[in-house]
Image 1: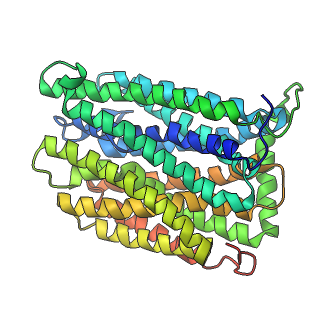
Image 2: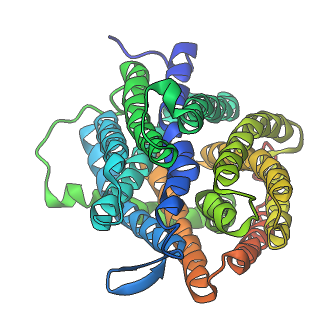
Image 3: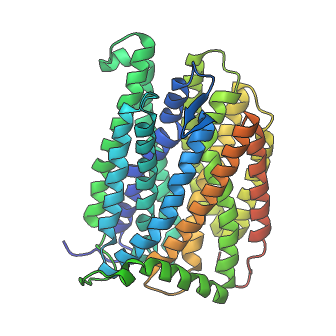
Length: 442
């Protein structure tokens, strides 16, 4: 079919729908079911395991694996974005990572401590698949939407993602709490374990199935060049990153914004990735069953509130500007991390989950659209968004390593959460330095 015109409603909706398809990964695998499943595996091991020649705490181990995956993504995304720009077929690369991620989610069905390396490999590849696909997905935003449309469609994408992922998580929760209704037999603990494993398969199927709508309407790419790939072309992505780096010297607003975004990413993504592990270990649940239900309810609460957060943040940015709104949200994050040190009861965790959901939805969608607005006039959007993603991933690597090291040394993640508050304070300082003259429309 012929490519749809830039700004068309059908094209914008198709782009945003990929959030519906892939967000089940972030909710079920990264945030809710897998962390609970992973913690349950260590219930008789005092949270420690001998792996890679080290005696590691389980939450520190998963933090380091996560950081390693993001480090790989930092390296491969410039390679792939360079190739995608050259052959003009970034949709194919987006599909590849989508399928790697979804199939790896299905592979988590076989995760166990006896074959821990295989399970960690599936977890590792799932992360690479999800985040790798986002390099190309995000780069489509300025290609398919005009500047005045970008805040709204970015927020719509995140909102669709929250709603879709919550829908699947509700089904998964029903399976876990009432496995017999879904013909999952066995003694209660085994049945719940199997229900969690089935939920990993469902994530993979959901991701592949619903992404097809997006692929049907998205254009192939900006260019239509079909020539032999050479070494210089393969490494062109790094050349493009270097070019973007030097271009930042000519765009002070974009450079300073990226500084604030980089530091903010250290905190936001780390909190999102470790919240369930923190809740499982540090909150005083009355029983294992209450812990499972409570943690999933908290994650559901975060997702539902995040929808309102994304929408209200979009409206706030229209009234007050993107940068002032981001400063306010980062300030809330800083206070949130400081207070998290003191929470111990389930009710505390529910309240904090509500706050986290609201600011999470706002900061994600607004950060992406603010960056898009600050870009110079260019057709080479993939390189700029590759730079954006590399900055975000390096921030996550640092954040997860800081969290994992403190967790491993102290045996508790509480102090690690407090350290994350410092990142948000620094981000506020950096965002305040973004020139207001250049960003008066932000």
